[in-house]
Image 1 (tube, rainbow, N blue to C red):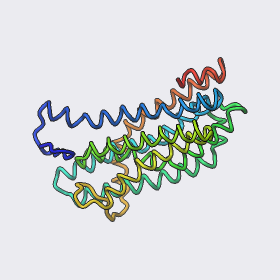
Image 2 (cartoon, rainbow, N blue to C red):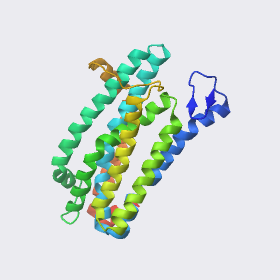
Image 3 (cartoon, one colour):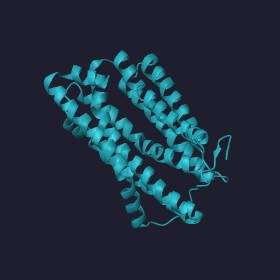
Image 4 (cartoon, rainbow, N blue to C red):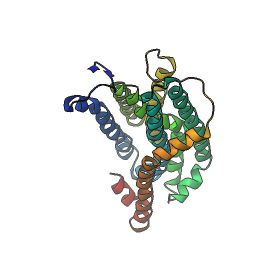
Length: 278
């Protein structure tokens, strides 16, 4: 049965109900893709070609880090859903909490390492001396919000399991509008350049990470809740095993981006990276 924002996964699904069920997640993916373009639009138009090329140079690395969230989200969702289906709600919530807390810990470590090694990472990705300051600045600011970005990727899966896909779309919509508005204000009006674009992105990621985290923490009606838990390595191993295909598909796309950028820098220079970014 589907009422308002509630979708009962135990109900019988007709084609009409299935379409209504998948509509919100599809819109979420589409809108995420659209507002992801906004940083590049404002940077290219208000800062210049070098900054735009730098943004596109480090973006595959940022997406690679964020892919850990996809892995924990898809892999953990399968495990938690299994125990919900078996009627083991307490265990499902404990596993859900363990997955969330573990991802936060991993995210903090990856963010810290990437922040301090931003210069070396940018050089490894092929940044020229002109591109290096922009790439380092954009990468470091994004690492401040990368944990929230990882949580965003994770919670989009679990909001569906919690029968709240429309809530997930609403959060993405609000965060996307926040990103676009702040890009216009910080880059277009205030002239903060690539730093403004990065802070606009981080702010939207914080919204997408904090809001569902708070919902799962305080909601009394949610199927899934953040509770106390204990570390179980086998649960994390199963989560990673279940979600490794999602992780590898995203990482492979980032690697292709690395290789394209390196070849374009070698043969064409910054203009080639900018064209590929477009």
